Every structure is written in C-alpha cells, then in structure tokens.
Figure 1: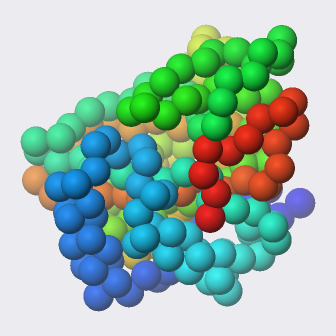
Figure 2: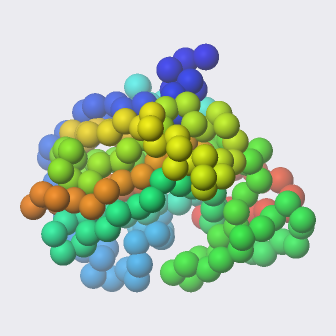
Length: 220
C-alpha cells in the first residue's frame, strides 16, 4: 500500500506555475460573470482543459488510474467577504444524470440545478478528488484539516467523526499545488482569519461507468 492509499491524501507541489495560476484565476472571474453557481465549472472550457492537464501530470497520473474521467469541478473561494467553516464530514454525494429508484440509492438532492445522490460506499471508494490551489493557503487561510487513514473506515457516524478529529492534521498548501484525496477521508475547515484569498478548483475523478443504472451528468 502506497502512502496515498494508506493516508487517503497526497499533496503535490508545483502542478501549476505562477503564470498558469494567474491565468486560470482570470478565467474564473470571467466565468463567474456568466455562470450561475460554483458547482458546475466542468462545463467551462478552461476547467475541461485543466482536467486533462491533471491527468497528464507525471506526478499525479500514477495516482489516478487510467480510464478515470473528471465528473465534476467545483470552485471554492474563502476571503474576508466570503468566509465560512465546514464541520468534519465525508463527501458522499455524486452528480448524476437522472434519478434511479433503487434501495441502495438514498439522499437525493438538487443543488444549482444539478441532481445528486448519496452513492454506495463501493462507488465512493473508487473516487479521487484533486484540489488545485490557485493561491497560497496557510494556517490563517481556512485550510483543510484531514484525518489520515479515515477513508479506510467506510461510512463514519457523526459521533465517531468528531472523536476522530483528535488525529487531524492541517493541510497548508502553496499556490499551484494539488491535494489529492479520497472523498471518504474525514475533513473539515475553519474560517479564514487572514486577509488573503483562498481560491481552489476541486475536481472529482471517477470510473466512467457506474452501477445500478446510474450515469454521470457530465464527463471529460
């Protein structure tokens, strides 16, 4: 078992250079003027191109199995004017094309016009999130707090998740770095206490085929 599979995350530096980060940040500002919401950036050409760049990166590609596709791209920004905290949790919902009635499929919801379902553990265990940091994210910028190895426990109850925070680590990151993580990894974040921006593009990679008659709403 390599470190990524053991810990459930890996931080890779210098995936993008400073000029690339600035260019992508500029594209995002234009997208935000024409796009409703922040969960559906995969429809934008810049994000589709970046998903290919992620898969081609010589350090990232060995950690992302061949044949996996990007199925979602979400934009997060923390700043003095956009500030929030996130309690410890696992990412359990996936974007799908239509509703399928099956006992294993629960927690249906619609966010920003997109249909989501809480996927069975067998699906979630295959997914990989890649968070591209467009800005430096230090201890005062609301970084992710991760519980190493917690993705191996399957679905974790709310009570056990709170207890698990005793083992959490703070994941500070440089601009241009990529954080790979399993969605089942317990994670949280505090509010930013600084004055800087923390802009992140959060890609979700998955096998192209889904069981139970499910289909991804979009793939790249």
